[in-house]
Amino acid sequence: MDSGPPEGLAVIDKEAGWTSHDVVAKSRGVLGTRKVGHSGTLDPDATGVLVLGVGRATRLLRFLTALGKEYTGQVVLGTATSTLDSSGEVTGTFDMGAVTPAEVAEAATRFVGDIEQIPPMVSAVKVGGRRLHEIAREGGEVERAPRPVTVHRFDVTPADEPGVYDVVVACSSGTYVRTLAADLGEALGGGAHLRDLRRTAVGSFTLAEAHPLESPVLLPMAEALRDLPGVVVDEATAVDVSYGKPMEAGSLGLEGPELEAGGPWPVLGPDGTLLAVYGPHGDRPGRVKPVMVLAPAS
Figure 1 (cartoon, rainbow, N blue to C red):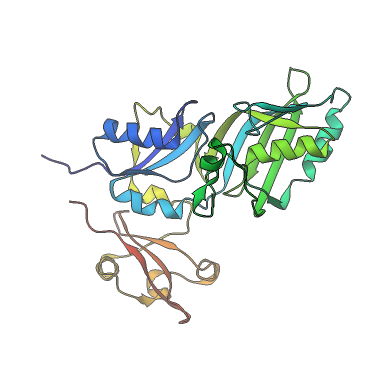
Figure 2: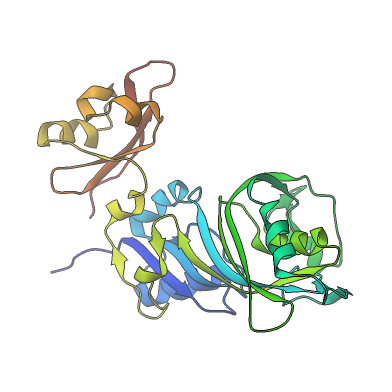
């Protein structure tokens, strides 16, 4: 019996040397469907967690892009590069042998909290309708506006190699760890670059449940929104939800802090199937309406 096209969420442990687009393209062949997308770009040289949506789950990826990220890597003091990481050309060298671990740790604290970053020229940010990395490949450089980001954690500890520090970073979506490394070097009176970047988590999706690109495991669609406060409804309400009916928040079990958070809220049927995603009903307090209704699987 045909079970229909594959759908769900795949947490991939990306290898170095693959672009996020490469992973999507390869996954299409592995999974046997064209309908595959990713929730957030990971640099080609970086490894670690890349979350893919498959089938109808591609529609849910927009709810994952804002999830926080966690990384490990190494900051190399004394050498600045064109890409801010080890893939670029050396643009400057600095004698930073006298910098102490205490000074590095103190400087790192300046980048914890709400900060502003200038996106690197090798990023996918668009300026004037073009991606920065496209302009950089042509040898160009343009002015970039600082962007607000939040760094929750920036731990630095000396590695075995002199001038190299292991780092652990927890941050908001849109944070560039390579920029943190370069800015840290400047704050210490010299320069630095990043190497061996590994993304260890996207929201609650961690390396513990990540699989190689060649052998992906599909999680149920409802798992895609597990980091959002969801509700489970009875069969009668499930029918209304499946038709995209606006309703009182209370009829979905939304109240108190959960309602005040403003959504979006995943709505699951009695069997745990994801039926829809609801959000506030404009300026009508206590009313909610569907942001997305998921059609039944074929």
